[in-house]
Image (cartoon, rainbow, N blue to C red; front, side, top):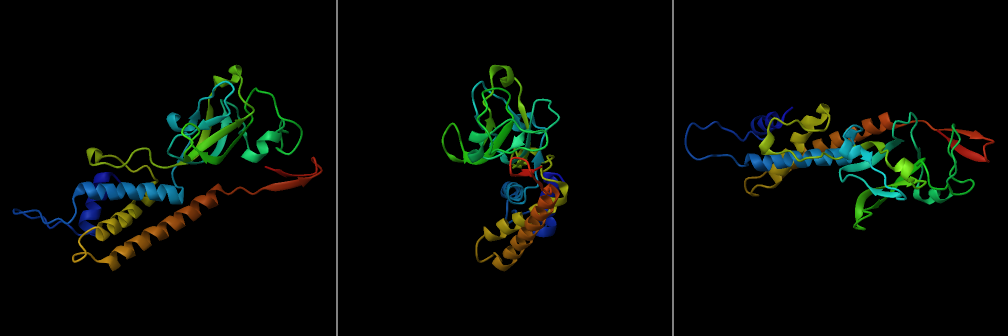
Length: 254
């Protein structure tokens, strides 16, 4: 659905706020600008809470341009989480690990990665990554996803970007300036945007005219959709983990 179609549905069939006057002053309780803002807020919230917006193709979002000797990178502000990472055109994903394990990283076996063995690697081709720090590496402000690679890239490998699979928020808010635009979240969730927008609209008018009970019902419907969407997404992302004995003791195998 386009922004215009969502706006029409919200006005005519959800809020029922258009009477089609032939003349006289406008009798609308909400202006289109506010309603589109509510729709945009709904898309951002749904993407953030339900994790339904995935991206592996937008260069400005998913490509990490390396610098010689640099291990920490600030990711695009829209990114909520990184699902996987590949160096250049490699066919296999880089190994995912965590901040605390990177200091003991070793060359991975082709079948599994055990971060608890041997010594640190010298600079070279990045082989592992972590994103469990939420710190803006430039400003030092919490909230931005920080991407760390290991080992530090040398000049030979810094010219090739790392490509990510991500979960993110919308890149641009919905706007009256582009009513032909389509929300970035999957179409299956477009109608859910109407519930949050209706909740915001009914809560933000004068209390004498508003119906808070009805508003809360719209929010409940939105929250239920978010919960179901998140459940569906997490089920699709789930991958069983196998384990094996006799490989440097006990290790997880992916």
